[in-house]
Image (cartoon, rainbow, N blue to C red; front, side, top):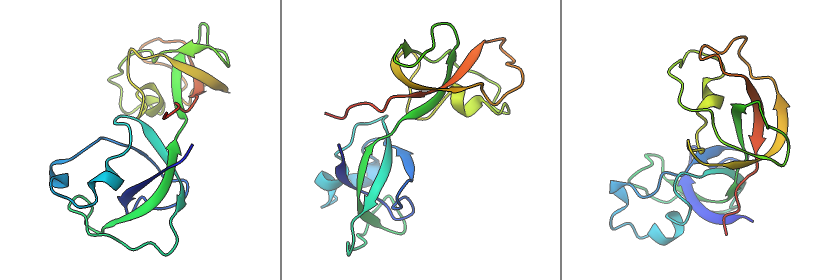
Length: 150
């Protein structure tokens, strides 16, 4: 299901993904609050369409303004412990990783997913992009199902 919301003009392109962080200080008193602050904080979204002929609105948070777009919750790619990881099962992230230089780090700590939460695995992608896990974890790269926003 899609939702109409406002995003900064730099994000207003089909296929762009972002994590909604909720209300910011600059949102106080904004006349567009109801159209903009209508997503679930911490959730990852994908822009599915940009409203044609929509105007660019002044925004205290986005220096180039905001545009109306349609978004839907996005699937999240993540590394999970390999044991029990199969399509349709539920899995949690393996835990924080301090090795930010690792090519898998963005999948071990993916934006839009929280440690301690369970997510349903939609697809097994395969092996993670790293050659060796510096925390000696046996991991599988998966795609979590997009959550239902209802």
